[in-house]
Image (cartoon, rainbow over all chains, first blue to last red; front, side, top):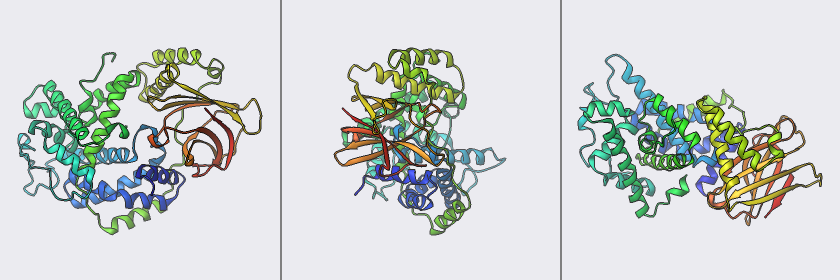
Length: 200
Length: 239
């Protein structure tokens, strides 16, 4: 059986050549993960499905920009997905009186309350993917402040200035929390035997 | 931006920097290997955060709509960007490349991000060429033409390779040069190579971990987009 990274690279070579069946195989391999991230960020199934389709159209059109030497395909794919979702989120926020997607009451959650609950955004279900489970558990062990900065920056698309202003913190503190969050996460994953250097 | 940016890299990797600041960081990363390595490590870690989102199965209609859309829209067929440099650089391979690239680094400082990214690649060349543990592999032409040649420099510690090729014959518009890493399991497909009109090209790549103990490397002519097995090997060599 081929390693998933090697299979991804081979499929991407075929995608660059215009082989639609290779894109279909990539979709079958990664759609659940991409859709999961879309749903996590956009929090609205219809928006997430639309975005899932746009992500794979982007893969089709920009496959030649993927450089295997710069990291794993999944890292590239999830980076593309995150950026497209955040762009969409920011467009929605910029609309007059727009609500955060998925908030039925039409109002965004109070900013300072996001992720202070240690159980929030760390679902126990869907642990089929062992790595995803490891990462979720590692995130759950971070301090609430460190989880909060990951949530606000990565999953909500807020910049350090916006985070600092709304949390009433100096920007330097936001940086420190982010740095400690990744440092602790790396340490915990290393303890679990995850070889991060293989992903670079 | 000359100061190190390591304090900013975590939030940068998490996508939390304003665009202007992010551009300044990228400019620094193009010049600073230490910060760039740290940024790459953070990027991989953040990639895992992305993959931690619970997997969800979309409806089948999404796949059908996607395939319908791409059927009506051919992909971009541009080959992967591999930097080309003037042929004179090859003439003084080691130090001239180092001096020239460092000079270019200085000259291009503050230019557009695309140019900064090229500079980052040049630093990789320099890093490999200056490595005291680098391994040199000379590739010779399979048709014994002494003009066609290539050299590869591999830093085993970072698995970085610099490949310089010269005097490769012209190929058709539907063909491409492709690099192969020959392992015990046979030839493994690697990157596609571009050469200029004089058959000269230079590129860098990171050898994947499973292929780190390759025995030899080769360059072949393949149909556009590359192949899974070599078709016509034109250069080959081993350590």
